[in-house]
Length: 92
Length: 416
Image (cartoon, rainbow over all chains, first blue to last red):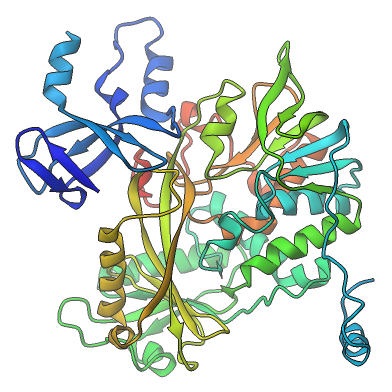
């Protein structure tokens, strides 16, 4: 798989470390009344879809940036690559 | 009629005209007592034990493709019970005992071959860890022997003993471990279940569950609705997708694991070897091919095929421990989809929906677990209580903080 890094261009996926679903960027509020349940869901439960999946890849053998990659889990086609920091800022 | 030496002789002199299909192609009935979703090894084993050990009637197994086309035909055929944690070791030892009696039980030759599984160690700390694991195995009634480098050299003189970086210092041997012809496991369980009246329905994909007021009354399929008092799901690889139809999210990610076979070679490896300094395991099939594998690719996938970096990594492992493998050509490679759970251990449990039961999360250890998984799941489906060796495999153990994490990796599925 080739990941088109927004800053560095096409890079082989073996340069990256995979973390998992991009929803891991959205930490629950620890002060919420439902914090225990929220953190359980956050830490352990996954949508695990067949098809389009937004996921976190870390460019360990490169510029050490976190990317949000939109990839199809059935075909391995990558349709979108964003810097995780841009995604996080856009959410604020 | 069953299989026997006499039968083979009789068929040989009568032109092999009496062999019948191993199981019937059943048409779905509108209603069953128990419906098993997934006609893989675990689903078929569950149906067999439900019918033979728990005296259940009116059972159907629904398979979206064909029997033997999923992970039961894609693994590297290894059986063993060399775990450290009690929750796992008791279960896998139960499984190994069932393997030992499998062929008589299902009246089918599955080529169960207890040729020994050897885990190599390369450092002193690794030796200490293997001693600890070997003792845990012995405490659970399994067999384990610690070998020195000389002991390993007597068995496999061709290994790379004097490597500068990862010298082989010895190994942990489980003589009762070995290999089983994986397709024959599916066929054997299908044969035995079919003989006891289980309907095995192929090309029948489940498309939804009939859930009303917290109770599951059956399933919707591509061949119409099928009612059931109890529904057991055993679809590892696709668990997340299937249970989502019942509104559940699971502590599971689906990942692809690749396996490989070399061209056919003369007999050179009579057991199973695993490398201790990388992830590589190898055995030789009766056809002569070296069957080997390594790590999962490490990203969510349902593709049943992997990528080249892992191929390279696995072959490097092979070259490192067994340099002569470099003279053989790789013949085939393929992928299977694993339920990678959050602690590396499986789940066999009821769900919050009455009448809906779940079996999955086998990571890449599902094949060796097939008999015990089927037995424990049948136990749960028939009696609504947990089998004594599978009590810990609960769906809520993550919320309760009772993980069964053999490697201590934490909630990161691609590291298990």
